[in-house]
Length: 124
Length: 111
Length: 118
Image 1 (cartoon, rainbow over the protein chains, first blue to last red):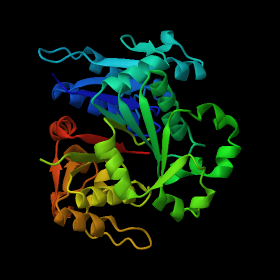
Image 2 (image 1 turned 135 degrees about the vertical axis):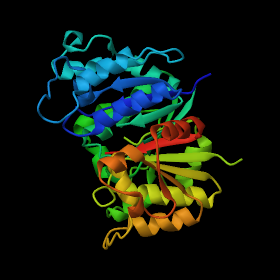
Image 3 (image 1 turned 90 degrees about the vertical axis):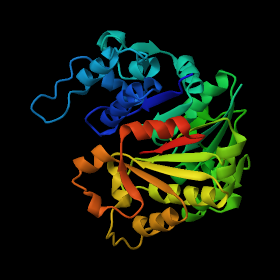
Image 4 (image 1 turned 120 degrees about the vertical axis):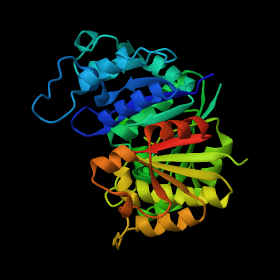
């Protein structure tokens, strides 16, 4: 069975490089045979916010990069799952309607289950 | 049930350190056996005075966790073993390696 | 075969304590006969350049070189080196450019994998 990787993203996009590098690892894991999931928590939930537009800044649009990641479809690649921590969203006055389609809002218990169920964890 | 070691390197007064403790709480609720080892600025959580008057940190203090704190990082920051909350076991790097490589099924961190 | 500890290092050597913690952890693990691998990611690649003159803070080049001689394996994210304009000729001996594919191999084959970011 394929080994699994959980990428935990705890920082907002653009403020630091963490979210961008984390997404790169999510993509890398997917195409290199790791069953990969991403968990967005604390300020990391902002990575899933709809409508990010860094046009003209030189930054890769990370919302779009996340959408593309969710759409990777190829033989032998299991689709990525992107989980967004609901209490972190709520603390930021956001809800599922603010988010990029295809992400899944989850509670504490699901986050814990994902962590336990993953062979490896990368914390960004 | 899995035995899980979380490494917490951020201060408990900082959101990253708090996240490590929140995740530990979630893992315990899921029935896992959890240990926490504090290192770097994480060690401030083990200081008795902080522990006794932890204010908003109170709800993330966990029962049922085995706590460790890295001696080298305590000493560097000016705390003696007597100043450490007794429920923390003070360990050195070789002991941390044993915890990571032999004593737990999963290691998570650092937070 | 001995177990493998792998550490992904994300931070620069002279802003964060991660370098020192990682070095001490690697040293203790090597002393116990474990295999230890580093993968430097993002700014972590700055740990493995030559001609570092740091004083008053543990010198990453000196300490990593000693551990590499003792069997520490070091791989650096090639894209991250390229981003930062760091050429192969600026890297310490034993620290080689690597790839995302190799990072994933490390993740798959390690007994313990941790990330040191901030």
